[in-house]
Amino acid sequence: MRLELVGRTPRSAADPLVGLVGSKRTMKQKITITLDKQLLKKARALAAQRNTSLGTLLSNELEKLVEQETEYEQAKTRALALLSSPFRLGGKIANRESLHDR
Image (cartoon, rainbow, N blue to C red):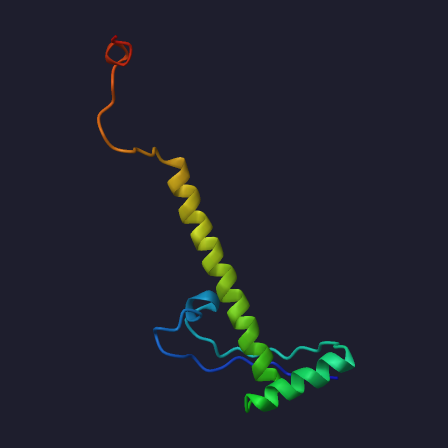
């Protein structure tokens, strides 16, 4: 089976995926994939239920996957930056003498 996945025209500026591949998403690339017959049958049925083509269905899911991965990497970078900076619980720092007063 030959399946054509094509990119869509650029969406609004609020589209989180626009910046992933560049500001314009007009480049299209055909791909060929091999799928199990049962999987293909179910995927076609799912696409029909959603009133879309199989190519569009797969393209949308790949976009979501790439977006999730990008968001994960950004969150990971922010978390690691927080871990590498000093963490204060608040209050004032006690000196040794006040800690050992009896």
